[in-house]
Image (cartoon, rainbow, N blue to C red; front, side):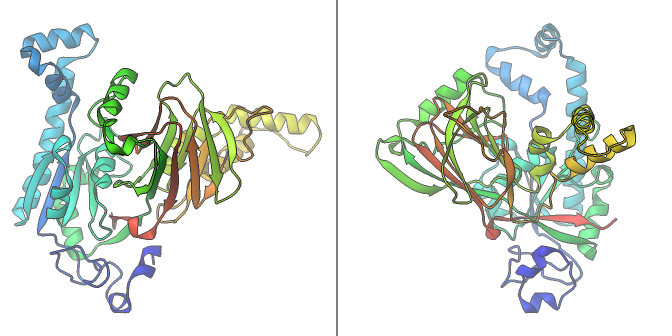
Length: 415
């Protein structure tokens, strides 16, 4: 039985383990509560913006036609035909998902990422993200109702890993996935998420959406300046404000200019404050422990071999080095960085900490239930799931924590 079952009331526990939550405990609105499965009436399908669409939008207002777009892409070393082909594959798979839903009598609303808003979330019984992991993260970011399922479909499996999406075979056989939901051949999985309380002096609650494009430093500064006229940026102490977004993967704090060290103070689990300079701070969930956090902290076999050679040279242990031992040690360490998405704990990582007589890093990484950070930065960002950025400059304070009520409802289909 999953850990999320413990959140349900006694009446729900009388139902099959795969039954949707009851009306008194987390049932998705307007969804039939049946022990046999889950059948939504209204579904919002959130689709990604393909690279082809992005390039079209980029030159739309300059009057560039398709032939000229082809030439511009060729100058950048990009293939017009290749981008168009990937766009068509994505579009065909989105159409397959939408038709499958409508054939079951489900009311469907298809929205582009840029048009996805809170009203769409309120309207739907379930959200389907049609894209890759980035689209799934965006779709999840606006869902604050723990009872509303979010399901990812990978619409371009050849080019996208889709860790957060349904298994690849359902991309082309989505009716099979629907029927498994109807028959109850799945289990609910509540992925824990991070919440953020922002307070301090000169804070700016206006987010910058990074999903549509990667902003340059200049664009990023201008975007924040546009929101800087709001009263949230006053010199008085403000907050704490609970930000209306939850992190499914991770929160990253650091200077916008990567060559500049990030200066901040940090307190882990209400411990003493510590001044740090580093390349930034990453705090992840169990879901995000397989993503950026993993790549920050993982060890390469070469590193493990060099450490074991030092151990052997100092005769600390009688180690017989061979390829098998190095592989086992490497895998054991790297696997220790990954934890269950349903666990209500976080993992923090200080990237490339600077240690001297002024700055220290007593703990470079570790599990935690709460992290507080006070910015001493010049032009820093707090980025949620790589898609939404908040200004985080000198005087701003953020408290990073988890609450079981913020968990995201997803499904694991039986195989």
